Image (cartoon, rainbow, N blue to C red; front, side):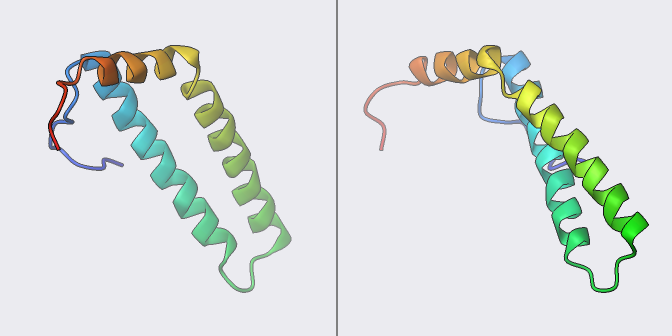
Length: 84
């Protein structure tokens, strides 16, 4: 599942890749939340969706670690000053 084929406005290629992966995982979580809103889900369906949601949230938690936050901070620090 891709968000877009357009490049991101960041200079660090690692950060760009991580942001794209984050976007994809967020779309996955959103789809799972929508599935949980469907009427007449069986208990087995609910359990499967919740298990996938748990795995996705663990992945997001691990993905958004201190290294990722540092890459974002560095990218912000490299932005030019004064452009509105």
